[in-house]
Picture 1 (spheres, helix red, strand yellow):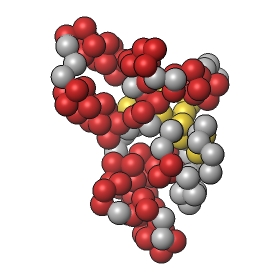
Picture 2 (cartoon, helix red, strand yellow):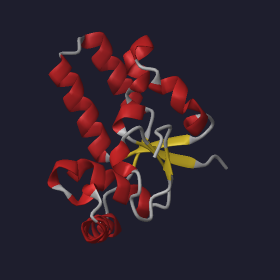
Picture 3 (cartoon, helix red, strand yellow):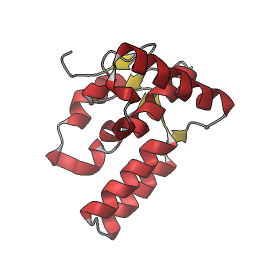
Picture 4 (cartoon, one colour):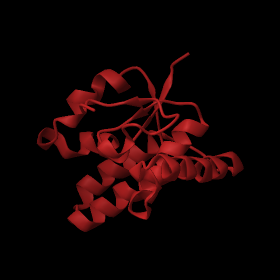
Length: 140
């Protein structure tokens, strides 16, 4: 059975940036042969980023196609509890994921923890997150 990984927004959208983003190649070893899953927050961030950037119809269709090809994790009662628990843990530890500015990232990390899946991300905010199996190319 193919294993699954949660991908954060920057990794998810890397392929849509073409040659401008080295992230796709850098993270291929973490995603190749695996089932890619995302959170609703990742999809919202990707759509918002496309709107802000003024993407044209062709790029928007590429994003829509990418969204159709991935599984989206359900937000259920256990996910909501995981968000609350993780935010509290991060607050107690002084980890920045508890701050409001990182709310979407908190939900992404908590979903990965709740579903016991590794998170593939190129964002330092996830480094040191309690209970999170992080796969990153960033140096911690």
